[in-house]
Amino acid sequence: MNGIWYYVIAFILIWVIAIVFKDYLTNHGVEVNFPLLMWKTQRLRGFIDRLANRAPRFWRGYMNAGIVISAGFMVLMAGALAYSLKTLRDAPTVSLVVPGVEVPGSPIFIPLLSGLIALATVLIVHEFSHGILARVEKIGLKSIGLLLFAILPGAFVEPDDEELNELSRPAKMRIYVAGSMANLTLAAIALVFMLIISSFIMPVVFEEDGVQISRLTEGGNAINYLSEGMLIKGINNVTVNDSASYQEAITTLRPNETVNLQTDQGAYSFQLKTNPMNKSLGFMGIQVQSHNVIAEPYDNQFYSPLLWILMPLSNLLFWIYFLNFAIGTFNLLPMKPLDGGYLFENLLSYIMPEGSYKPIVTFMSFFMGIIIVVSLVVGLVGTPF
Image (cartoon, rainbow, N blue to C red):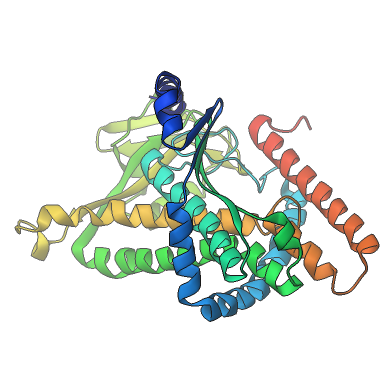
């Protein structure tokens, strides 16, 4: 079933339940205002206060370093986004990703379950970090809680704007960068554990035995001939026995050519389409994963079934890393209403008056926004030229 239908079904179930039990939910602190469900609580306020009061000097020092790191990523992300105009037609840099849904023009498909878990970590650590730094700076929090916009989950921490505006520039910048720094920190932790599992544990425990088709996409012809779960043995008479040989083989494919695939279930031939991310390469519409078997010393042991947990765990850690890094750095773009826009504004205020830096921030927000919108549109519908 197409992943979008999971969202449709969940949307219908959640809102039917919310409307039927609206009075009960309202009595327990849940605001039901279609399309928004919002749960506010004071329990999370106490949790945030405890974290903030436990080590305020650590939080300030951590985010002082975070200002420098975030400013660096802000420059890199702005430069990368501007440079993406050069490759906009062939490979749009910005694309929409939704867990479990194949988005036209996006080179990335995020599995539904692991994607939703990873996305939850992004939202929770980001918003709660803003709240922790706000409390470190003695700023009141108007509201804290969780929300659901239609079917999209979120978390929110709303500092008191008047008190925030009265802070010094360094204090405000520490609060602005807290969310992205938390995302980058979690991304680094997830990456380390993923590399430990995938680079040191799995190569010992498992042996690679070819590549397996994990998913067939709508944009290629392979979906009309192949099936998920097939093992690919060769491409155009080039033997494929591991991920490296597969990657090497597909770099030789060209658009509109006929590709010959040898699989464990027979040979298949079909015409290649154009790769949406690189128009010089052919596109089959196949996503693969390593086909692993448990190595001899660890096979047929009482703990052998547990070893299969390592692969989905490594996959989950990858998506936690990927989404936290991608969204955390995207949030540092010098454009409002992203945190990077407020950081950019405060940094400029050190070197020029308000009448000069306000127009610069407005222009950058407009310029960055236009590039993002155009990239999304080109990725979804293509270019007319």
